[in-house]
Length: 376
Image (cartoon, rainbow, N blue to C red; front, side, top):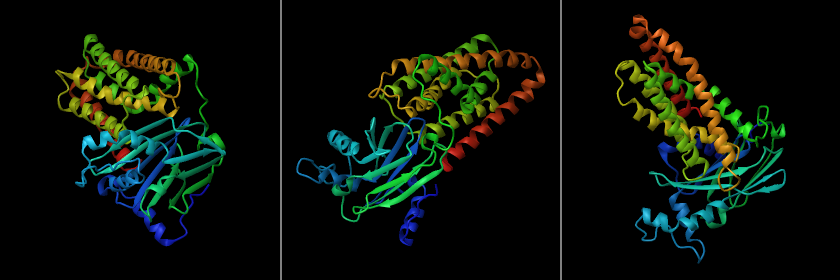
């Protein structure tokens, strides 16, 4: 299906302007965005609007009090906290989604206020990718006249499925999606058993090349069994913590932050290996800290499947998926370590091989960082 384009030139220019990096210029009043993307068994949506518009929405109606209570032009932590329940009510109903004519309720609602006074609403709509998708923005009645909202829908591979500039009179976008549940590629079967999630965890670590590169860089400078056990244990404990917290819906960090951070961790470890390949004291601490970030990346797999604490029993998916990741990780370490220890006996490898391998690792991390910051 070809992306739906605006009929009026001015709307085309507005869409072009929205392609600029929002973090650099911030959101202006009177304009909001809704970025939606299909994942394995879920449609993720992130709505962004200026705080001034959100304040106007909260002030609309006698039962709601203004977000900027003291009207000083800034939103304090106390003001944000005191309005949190009202914000959640408003945010949960900000977008109505229908899959094949069936209304889909949101399974999660996350709120965030960034340093540029942009308000972010994260919503998840669980379910298989439909043949027909209907989106309707519902906040126009609470916002100033003339407010616009640009909606875009992307496939799992990032392909644009459709977009439209919405307003109070035309507040919906309807799309017919080719292939129904194909999502641009063969659909992964829904997993529900312990064994299924276990195999998914193994598959994820074996095909997660960024995680593998990070693990390889850690093991590359381990000259004995004790050092290897320490590194693997710290990495395991750390990513298990954040995997559990994120799956239990206690912590949420946008993938736009997590994925570049994982790439940055690869750059750091590779560079550290290159600069000082021997005597890396304190490596366990940096391994633990970066492991927390990688755990958030692992959690995105379960979140993409709609596995979160307030929608389903998470015990089986969480435990079995994590065990699968650990089993896959141990298997890889079991293959890599004997090879690494053998080649580390050669003086030439210590002087030339370790720096070269570390430089390659850092370069790959740099490639992923650029890709995830500017091309995703």
